[in-house]
Amino acid sequence: MKKLFLTFSLLTGLVTSGFSQSQKRDAFTPGERWYDENGELINAHGGGLLYDRGTYYWFGEIRGTKASEGVSVYTSKDLYHWKNQGVALPKSSDPTSEIAVGGLMERPKVIYNPKTKQYVMWFHLELPGKGYDAARAGVAVSDKATGPYRYVKSFRPNGHMSRDMTLFVDDDGSAYHVYAARDNYDLRIAKLTDDFLSVTTQDTLLFSKHREAPALFKKEGKYYLITSGCTGWKPNAASVHVASSLMGPYQLLGDPMRGPNAELTFDGQSTYILPVPGKKDAYIFMADRWNPKDLKDSRYLWLPIQFEKGQPVITWTDRWNLRSTFPK
Image (cartoon, rainbow, N blue to C red; front, side):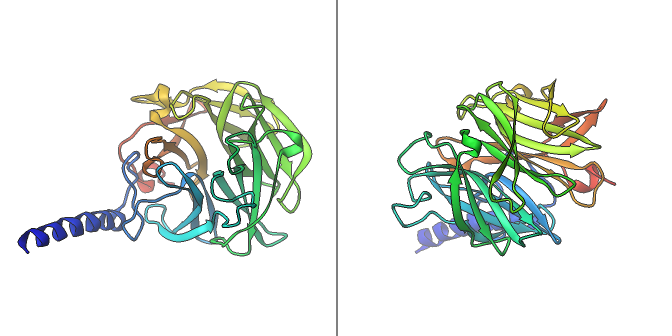
C-alpha cells in the first residue's frame, strides 16, 4: 500500500507540475515544454495565430508520435496561458474524404473575412496514402473562430504545387497566400478572392531558391519574409528578404538569427510572425523545433524581433516577457 501511495503521489506531482507551470507562466521560455491550462502539452505545431476582439487563437497541427491528427485551436488573453478549445478541423472518418486518416494537414492558418463574416482556414494538404505527391492547398470555414470548421475543398493554386504556406492580410484588407511550389524550389504569392476561399490569377514568383516555411510581416511600409532551407526535419539557416511591394521584388538581407546555433535557426524552423496588438513595432517570431522521433513533443520557439540599422534581428534568449521587451 505504501508503494502504491508513493507511486500515486509521484504521478500526481508530475501532473500538478505541468498544471502549475501553465498557471504561473509570466514569460516565454523558448524550447521548453509548454503546457495548457489543463496541464497538458500544447499540441499545435506548424501553427499560426489569429487575434480577434481581445482573444488570441492559436491554430496548429495535432501530432501523434508520427501521425497527422487534424487541426487544434487554443485561446489566450495574454499569450502566456492557453486553453485547449479542442479540434478545430478533425480528420474525416469517411475513407473517401480528402482529409481522411492517413493524409497530412500541415501549417494551418486562419483569417477572418469581415464581408462574409466567416473564419477561413488554409493549410497544406496531402491526400491519404499519397505521400507528398498531392501538394495541394486545403480550405475550410467556420462561423466561429474556435470552429468546428467545415472542409470546403483543395486545389493547386493556378496549377502550381502548394506545400509549406502562410496567409497574410494587408492593411487594405486584401488577403494573400504565400506558398512553396515546384517541389519547394519556388516560393510564390497569390492574392485571394474577396471571399478568401480561392486564389485570383494575381500570382507571382518571388524567388527560386529552394526555400520553405514562409513567415511574413509588415513594418513601416516594407514587407519582411523569413524562410527556411529545405533539409527535411534537419534545421538549417534562416534568411530574410525585404520588399517595398508585397508582390516583390524581394531583396535578400541575410540570416536574421543571432546567438548560439543561430546558423541552424536555434534548431528550429519558422512558421509565423505575430504583430503584437497594442504595442508599437512589436513582433514575435514563431518557430518549431521539430522532433521527428516524437512529433507531439516538438517544441515551440517564440522570440522577439528587434531592428538594428533598419534590419530585423532575432536574438536567442532563454527567457523573456512582453512587458520588458516591448515597453511601448
